[in-house]
Amino acid sequence: MRIASYNLQKCVGIDMQRRPARSMVVIRALRADIVVLQEADKRLPPRPTALPRDLVEKKGLMPVDFGQPRGSLGWHGNAMLLRPSIKVIEAQGLDLPGLEPRGAIRADLDTEEGPIRVIGLHLGLLRRYRLMQLNAVSRVLRRLPPLPTIIAGDFNEWGPKTALDAATPGFDFVPTGHTFPAPRPIAALDGFAHTENVIAKNHGILTRIPAQAASDHLPIWMDFDVTDETPSQTSRQTATRKANA
Image 1 (cartoon, rainbow, N blue to C red):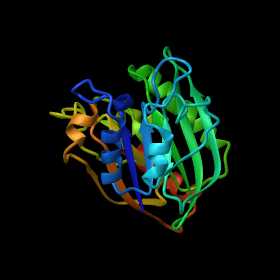
Image 2: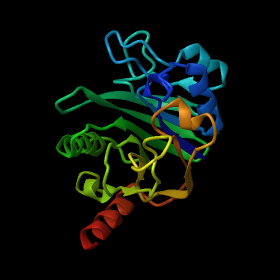
Image 3: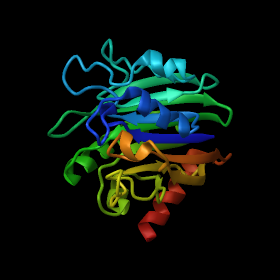
């Protein structure tokens, strides 16, 4: 299966034009089964969607309902689109701590690989708050039955993501490349982290036209499989490896 993550920048490109149809061209080019979006809604209340729902559905993807305000595509701007073959078991919008309003989304999904959990997020601008926000997500996950899990989104981390290891026990980061700013990327702000029972088979960045103009971020993708190992076993293995690194 393929998962993708894309910061839409509210469908405003580097030419300062809001063109949702252009953003949708980029999303379709990712050929992903699961698409996690950031900045999918406009910033001010009532936060209307920047990417029209009917455009998404017309192109064969279904938005997940996280209990967002009427007219919004996502929760705090985070949204998730699925192929119709993937069914939602449970979905939740999360409020995250920090100086500025931030949120995350959590969806447990029934897929051809079996049940998986996907977390979508857009972390704060200061590392202190990024760590607080990831710790909040980790606390939520500890209260849930374990599932193979992928965290996808804009981590806003300019340095190596090993700086976030302490707040992501049981997760490995995928070494995605530079995605920001889109015309000439110098920072790997966007990324994936996964439990060890999720195997990252391949990953990349979409650079073809119009991706370099449709947002200030380039989208990323990852092909993955799910193993038969139990999450409790693999989480202990990952935590031990990180502690010994």
